[in-house]
Image: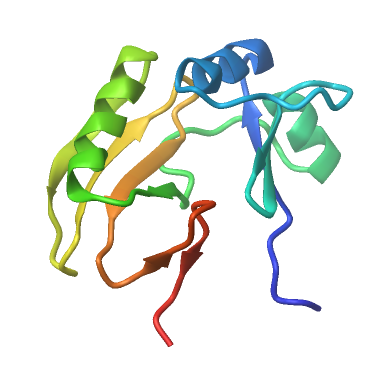
Length: 139
């Protein structure tokens, strides 16, 4: 198996609402059939109805609380973290943890999107970032 994540699919209550949330943050949805797709560098983020996604995987759709994962969006500067968190809140997100200096030397905060998924917004001076926003671990 190649070391790669190609697509992250989130089970959501309302695909149109989830797409609109990211569009309010300036993201552009793909014209791919079915809607709910966003090109994210070399990955794709997809929104799909929660109950249908659970049925496809053969698991119950019920449950709540911490799902055991977060998304991370790294920024190019410490100041950009605060700006992105403010944009997310204006778009309908709930700030879960305001930005603060982190024990690992960076600066980060968290928001919860309209379906309850957690997003970390972080500036990490130890990671490299290319012009396209690709993040790279130190060698």
